[in-house]
Image (cartoon, rainbow, N blue to C red):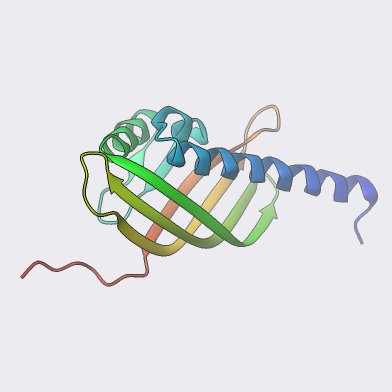
Length: 143
């Protein structure tokens, strides 16, 4: 049985993780690659679909800027679970994204699933240590 202090600590950690997630979602919706990178730990790993992993802040920044530059983004997450394990936490859920070319054209829609692993940083803040997502849609095959 947890005491009140333990419950309070868990609640504070979950709220901090919620804040990181909200900043992550807002960064994408605002087209702000630097804010997206700020949600990650310095040695974070971003694992986008159909691309190599981005290792560390500068690699994540370069990929994120290239991804966001030509697009207007509408992004949302639905969290299915968050589990804490000491200085780590993992989250599993689903996403929905609409990507509209800034140059004009039809929006691209995608839905899928993700796993995000958070790590507690010095000072007690949390950051995204690993982030992986992939589509529920079948792969596009050009004919």
